[in-house]
Amino acid sequence: MEYSILKTAMKILRMYALCDSCLGRQFAMLGYKLTNRDRGRSIKITLLMDAEASNNIDTIQVLSSMGMLPEASAVLQRRGMLHHEQQVCFVCGGVFDRLQEIASRIVDKVLGYEFNSFILGVVIPGWISEREDRVRLISGSTYCENIKSELSRELGKLLVSMLKARFDPVKPDLNIVIDPFSMIVEVFPTPIYIAGRFRKFRAGFPIRSKLCRVCMGRGCDSCGGLGIREVSVEYALMKVAMDLYGCESVKLHLQIDDGRDRVVLGLGRSFVLEVRKPKRRSIDLTIFREKLCSMFEGLIDVGELAYTDKKSIRQMKASFEPEGYVLRLKPMEPMSIVEAIKHLKKLEGLKVKQKYPGLKPRLKAISDLSLQIVDDELVEVRFTSSEPLHTKSFIEGGRDTKPTIMEVTRVAWLPIDTIVYVGGMKYAQLERV
Ligand SMILES: [Zn+2]
Ligand SMILES: [Zn+2]
Image 1 (spheres, rainbow, N blue to C red):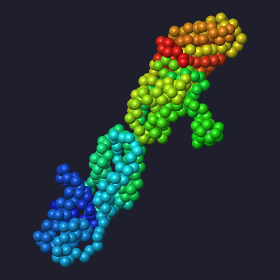
Image 2 (cartoon, helix red, strand yellow; image 1 turned 45 degrees about the vertical axis):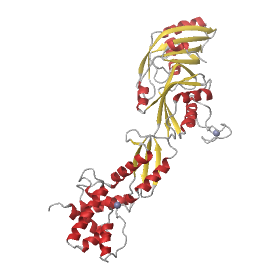
Image 3 (cartoon, rainbow, N blue to C red; image 1 turned 90 degrees about the vertical axis):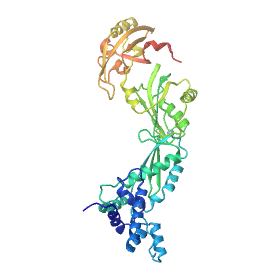
């Protein structure tokens, strides 16, 4: 049988009351630059004119009640034949008539967030989809669109003009989720990523904070309300980010975790700070640095700050630069310091194999060794490694390190302190503060 839009539409309307959008959506692939509402209304009007021409009162009545077409009701009224009750759309229940109201609700919810772009997700309850499927059994699926994509598009258009923001499915600032049937709106600001380097001026100042054992993070007297056991690099960055961005939390991504005991100088350790659920986004990073330096003076400094994206985390983790080390070592067995130096000279030109967590074992070349006597039981060892070295394991073993200083010198050493010059010894002139 030949396909007829008008016959199909009439067949649907005899069974289900449908608004213009929900009827038009059954024929969404037909006609260009039309909204589904245009399609639905055009079909209903054509059916009405056809019915008037053939004086088909039954069809006019269906259009008036199930089609909710005011022009059909007007025809019946003129003839004194309007007696049906007001219907609501079987599929959307009138949601397409309330788009403006729904959009206003979203606009209220996003007040207080700074953003230039957004993406909208529409949640359709299962029972609505089931109803749509029932209509589609009659219309067939050849030309139809689903309610979710129409609602997303129509609400999206309204929001673009109301919010004066871009619709950006790739890199949105705001992820908005709405269930237009329950009017529940959820707003998820996407994270901001800040790349940079930090220098850590003190040993005993940890990279990450452990939760306070007493309050488990809630803040109590014993931790001074911080919720953590002690201030760390992570805490310092988090504190500044929370003040400036009004964020909910942060995650610190590091190329290498230097641990609490190292002093980190030179170019500084690369990091990416993920600022989660920020309220503000366009913060001048020079202000970030100034604030951090004034709040945590003498502990940490940051540089090379730049906004970046998630991809840079992986890039940062995969790029290795040479590093200079200054280790102060004490022999753990009694020996003359001259003898100790003799042992340590064997480190020059060494190739060290070591495994960092999450990475394959890598070879690191030791060069530019220089040894200096600090006092009669302490030696300062300076060298460059072709890439980051876990010095504690290099001294005493661990992380599959081969060989260790202990193996090469046949002496056990106690590390007293460690300074790292990220980028190499040539940055050693940026001395400790
Ligand atoms: Zn509808
Ligand atoms: Zn506490």
